[in-house]
Image (tube, rainbow, N blue to C red; front, top):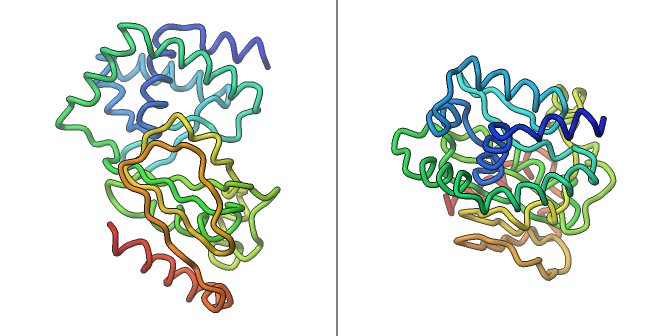
Length: 232
C-alpha cells in the first residue's frame, strides 16, 4: 500500500490536484479542469489513480462530481500527505493554481464552506452535515472535539440506506486545523469546551438544551436545522 500511495502522490499534476482539493476542502471536477487547463481525459486518469489508492473520494451532485480528501485514509498516510501538501503549496506553481481557482467567476464549486462541531460527532453534527449538504452552494463537514468510536444508532432511523452503506463515520476536529471556513457552527449540548485554533470568518455557538435532546429523532432533526438555517 505504501508503494502505491507514494507513487500516486509523486506526480506533479496529482500534487496540484491535491493542493486544490485541500484548499477548497471539496472541489468540482470542472473547476479542476478549468484551473489546471487539462483535458477531461487526462484529468480523469489522474483522479482515478488518486481515488483507487483511497487518497480522495467523491460524491455526485447532478451531473457534477465533487472531490475531497478521504478522511478515512490511514492516519499515518494522512499525516504524510498533509506534510507534503504543506511543502508543495509554498511553490510558485501551487500559488498560481490557487490564484487562478479563486479568480474563476464561473466556478460551479460550492461557495460556502461550513464546519459543524460538537463533542463526539456521533449524532447532532452528523445530522446537520447530512441535511445541509442537500442545499446548493454549501460545502458541509462535521467533526468532534472528542470523537466517539462510532456514530449513534439513531442515525439508522433517519437514514437507513446511508447507515447500511457505512456512509457515516466520526471525524476529529484536528483533521481540519489547516482548513479555512466561512462559518463554524459549534453545537453545545453539555459543557462548553475550548475549541482549537480554527480558521473561520464567523463562529456561531448553538445550544441544544437538555429537554431538546430528549425529542423524537425526527423532531430533533427539524429543530437542529431551524437553529442553523436562521444564520444561512
